[in-house]
Image (cartoon, rainbow, N blue to C red; front, side, top):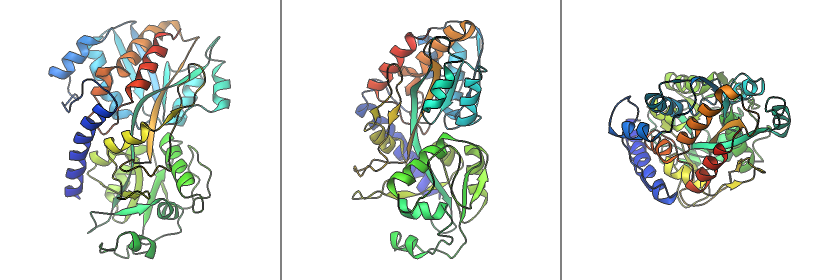
Length: 374
């Protein structure tokens, strides 16, 4: 387990540097920005243009919690008159709080639905909620199986595992994909999110697109698979996988790494199985298309990609804000904070945290849109 994680962390670091070049980020590195001091953090803080003051409330995606922790700490070290409170309640809950006018912005791993956009017009006076892509990363399929440190699965097999059709680890379908592995007859314990989650939405979109014959459930934030065990938040899924031999679950890469979990390599139809790394996620995000209208920057990902090295179970987390009609008391702080997170320093800070930077072409559009929030 430790060997695979060491290799993956090395790939994450190298992948982040590769992504920097591929995504035209002009300054990248693997400095540790998690502390409240240090050269890189100090430099980033000194470049932040502070505006507004008071409390800035936001909630939503737990996938970006670790990113928000880094961003918040760096931002508040520069702008001590602003207190940022981000609650990782899950994408569904975050959107609902935003639509109820309780927060300045929401984090969501899925773009707003048409009915949510319509509802947002009640909160965004004279405007509407828009999607601002802010951070990307792979959804790692993590597992805990004693004696097995290298595992390959494909979309069809994953669909059947999470739909309780494949129930033991020595199933012929798994053996076929792993002919050299000593697979035990251990019962499979599949963990999914019990809360409404953009992570679930993206994972089930992948299963639906890549294995339509095997996955019958509708993609969505709410789990629709049969059987399995629910856990609250990505941290809950990761904890349960770590504690139970024979278990499998889907979490963001940072949660898999943080819990020292092995991750599945995907057989996508490319020459070689693809590992969940930031570099491989970046290759998938770079292939995404902007499909949002007007100021909305919602992206469409290609879950069926067979491009070499492209990891298809990738999510993009959006910050959702009003294009017009933002609350006056939080508008300037919101703009200042989101300009930092979408900027070079904000994206660089995540390079070694298990996240994939947003392509600079898209990030530049985000910063321009944030400038125009009113």
